[in-house]
Length: 485
Image (tube, rainbow, N blue to C red):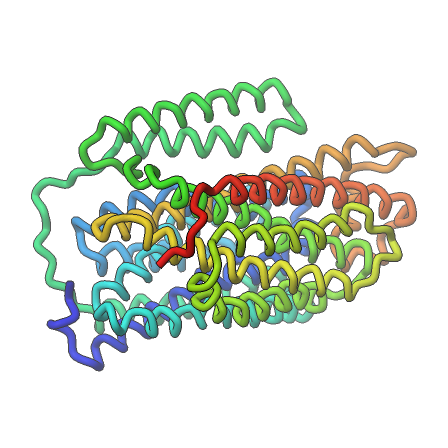
């Protein structure tokens, strides 16, 4: 779109901004999950702990398709710049949070910014580089994600152990300012602004109602079951209305035509469900290790790092695997291996070795690195050229939705199972204080509380195993029996 009008230096100024922005939004997840136990303990937020992640993921999911439409009309630069500024403001407010409610609102603001930044990094690369150059540039940009996955837990652990959890949010503020300045001075875009802005507002409203009702319903199930059930019904009805709207609207937010290919649909479902599995180990491995094994935040964060290393290594083999094997064969074998590794967590006792968490995380990283990369490549390949952008945004939305919904589900499971076991004078707040590794000196009933936390974590990973069984069955039912070329 713009590649012929941009010089070499200008393209790489933009690429630098895109690289830093990719790092900034991806490190957000890894760095925050490492600090989560300390945040929960200090702000007394165990009952709302899943919202720290869910608020960010929910607003990202809702805004992603909206920004995709706006970027086509208002230009990539304007929408991207807006996203970076909003994300940076949200980061600053998160770091300044004096309460759990303030933090959740600030995280939602961060997500509104991330909804523009994350998908537009891919769109901008497609705009300014030719098709032949694009694969190498995307590979280069993916190293920003890999770098964030490696250093995020280390930075998060170091900041929590030596300063405070507030600093895990402050580190993104200078990065956001740098990206905003690079875009402002280095990214010039000639856009013919359309007088007609065709946006599927009703589709956006139904999508937002469906997602918000779904997450609130999941959150309410363990405390107010009737309200939770009502909200889930509202979510279902809103989803049906969204589907009917998209079938009729001329320029839909999410085009139903893409889903005519069952193999394409399976790629989206697989990426969505596996993203739900991903958020499970990212959130609950550090909590398990810090609350029951008393390891530092840094050491607990390294478990997530080991998975990220395997993810990066495994992704280099995707091209060769796709060219030789049927997608359902690749996915089924790897999901089966991941399923067996997670089964061991359901039966894990207090004597379960710490190194086993690293092994499970590495198996998880290997499987995810291959399968989700394959989902991305195939979802773009299986649709017409004019729908590649939409297919990418649907995959992005699916991944955000998988993480958002399952973060709420796991949180509801954890809280419900903990509350069901409270007896002998043990309160919910006492369990809250044990969750952080810094609470060692202040809890008297640790020997009674530890089994409660262990049982709750067992049930969280029963949920993870159930998700893996579902995604395994979905891939086995893929009608495609040929290597896709």
